[in-house]
Amino acid sequence: MLREALISLLKTLFPDGQVREETQYPELLVPNTRWLEVATTLRNHEDLHLDFLISLTAVDYKDKFTLVIHMESTSFRHLLVVKTDLNDHENPVVDSLSTLWPTAGFHEREVYDLFGIRFSGHTDMRRLFMEEGYGFPLRKDFSDESRVLTLS
Amino acid sequence: MSEAVIRDIIVSESDDYIINMGPQHPSTHGVLRLEVSLMGETVKSVTPHIGYIHRGIEKMCESDSYQQIIHLTDRMDYLSAHMNNEAVCLCVEQALQVEVPERVKYIRTILDELTRLSSHQLWWSAFGMDLGALTTFFYGLRDRELILDIFEESFGSRLLHSFNTPGGLMHDVHPNFQKSVREYLKYFRKKLPEYKQLLTDNVIFRQRTEGVGVMNREMAISYGVTGPSGRGSGYSCDVRKIAPYSAYPLVQFEEKLQTAGDSYARYLVRMDEMWESMHIIDQLIDNIPAGDFTAKMKPVLKLPPGEYFQRVETARGELDVYIVSDGNKTPYRMKFRSPNFSNLFVLNELSAGGKIADLVAISGSLDLVIPDIDR
Image (cartoon, rainbow over all chains, first blue to last red; front, side):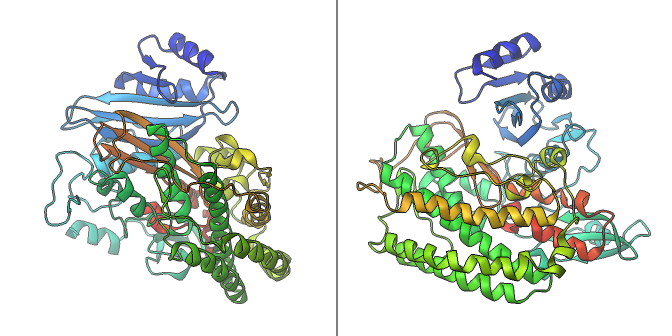
């Protein structure tokens, strides 16, 4: 789908979301309470059909976390970035998308391992790379002086 | 490691017969532990345990300059070192809106394809060896060695080149580069039919791989399986076609697809890709334009605040680099979407219900490189 058509369709489908147009790919920011619902629409809508979840990751902005999904449609070849903000920095929780994409479950485990964001509805919420009890290294307030060296 | 974790590893709660394949098993090609739950010889489920060589590359990137990051990316998928470097370079160049010289684009693409060729050769060698055909290892390594010689001549290193730098290349290629590559292609065109004779048409090999680990197109997409493994299921996912970069828009090549989705189909895709790689190099090697090997760059690179995303096709699938910049000389957040990470987790689905010997064939046909999973 063409970029303009995609943007106008997103605006009509998600009136409570914010669409950013000036970025590399169209971006959609939605409230975290509607995370699963929005993802379901994006995946199943016949004109969007965003069936390939490229990556699911997070960014720590110190006062909030932002979840970022890059997804592509294998039939129309348009790419969309979907984001949601998690304002609870201590104990962030959001719905899991592992029922929609099996690959999302493993990306979510990685995000949990690195950021400590929990995904409700995930059947296997264990650490992926590091052992239980280790901190969440990609949080900006993480410190481990004995093992993490800052290079300059 | 806490006591509870150790207890979990030793005593499984279920009554299944559990075998740990790895972390030091030869067929895992690295430190990967597969917890295989068995019923007799039949696999009930496979749980991958990863993280044995997690080095925190994404964390390290947050305190490194963009030129330094290049050297970390080699260490992810070490068999696609050149493509990993290129992904970061393209992302930084896109952010700074730098147009690299034509010469750089040509050389990068030739090196991409040479790297792909050498990676597929090593995969072919190891895949044959996993299934008990030891000769393939000697054939494959013999031919791969000569590509590494070309790399050594031009970059001084054989495996981890770090030859790309934002804006171009570290230095120009060796004056013999074109001659060496042409000679190599002439040589390997004669050798590749031997691969076919030895393994592709081998009855035992075909019985071990045909109909084993069947992945359909929907499964490939929903698990995010890309690269030759995805194309073996008829899923057209070649980033070189979807979002062409460097000199790929200038060359003619086919995206090789198979529809069967079994281990043999994934094997055939890689064999066809080797011919296709040579075809791409053929079109470029004689017309490398003269000129600079790098664009004019500032010594300290500061990306404008914003988010940048770059897709690159490595030998194993789609590698994406996602940079969040706040305007400093180091990235605020750097994410690598590595192809092997997604490809690994389809293993359970493919091997459940099959025999334990097929697990080796399936994991071999997915062509996993473990440092790329752990990062």
